[in-house]
Image (cartoon, rainbow, N blue to C red):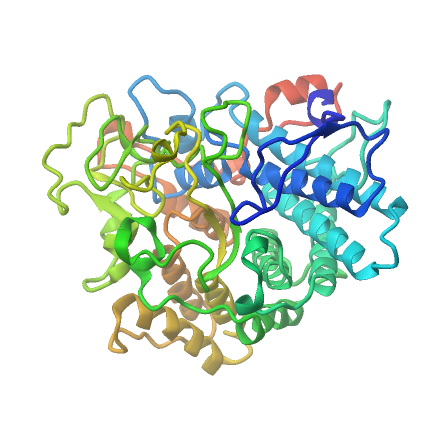
Length: 519
């Protein structure tokens, strides 16, 4: 536990210019003995907390959860370990150690800033102090939500641990979600309600009121679905969640990009670019690590999902992880522009130079949304293709907000739910002839869930959407057979969808950590 909960006393500071609010090139290091004296100290500590969002490749939640879902297999090479274990829900020593370390480091940094900021003199600028506090609490909520979804039973820390406090017991998930809700409500109330068009470019990547409200809606839907609750007790009712999402839809200034394919780098000349009006919150990456493996500021998971070991223009090479299940590709209707914009089809795109090589679980389909694109590469800027990719991850997209709005309004305002649902379908097909009629109850919910699968494919949402519909639904979707032994998957219901807590952490905890069921 000490290796996780005692983060280094040194904080890596960062500059904040251009795309590079989160440019993590180190410019200084200080200890907390002579630190946390000025507003600039607080800001640098805040940026250091944001920087943890970038960590991770092999154990990044988007990769882990897509592989665990029904939309992807493990893939990679014939001898690669880890990816296939996520796919098949198998034991693998410390498979999730990187994720556990990442989130508790981020929580430690947020907690340290929240503890120290009270003693910093902001010269009467209470609004700035409140904003930094709110952003730190947003980040703590973000880290905890990923952590509790993945592991379920985790220690809840609201302050930096002191010596003798390291062996903290696991908290009831209800208490973790309550803390998440409190943090997000504070963030939404204390970050200025700046509409998208007025956000300075230098602040892209920072949490906004709209990001906090959107994440609150996502947390509410997951918690109430997975745990079969009606509300986050004492904090967020369904009406509260509905109001938060409605505020984003109505007042944030965000909206849908006209054409779905243009959201992604693979559109090349038609790519609308990062930080467009559909990007409610993104995790920013930069190429400026320039091959330094100690600098975790590039998108390291992007190379994992690229076509294995070969460049097939416009697609660049990678490791072939998370090969796409043909069932996802075939789920799209004719005329749906999202199909070709989300998934690479080796056959349909006539990529005749492709060679399977040692690709494991080859399906003929790869990710297109986040695959590296020739002409938009880290190597073009002097970086390393494995660690310096700079394509941002859109963590919250306005389309997701609309679909949450549709879901939350099924039992309250069916007309509004239908309108939000129509906006997604109309954009996907570029017409109004493909609309489907929503109804209240389970039938309407199933239509929305199917739309979420198609709209948000390969964006890290599918696994959690399955789990919140119930373990039987998840098993029915994830179980796979009939494609050969390499593709056989059986979801183990005894795990309840939770991942294996790193065994090293369990061993270090002196009995305070208990392994999740089924592991």
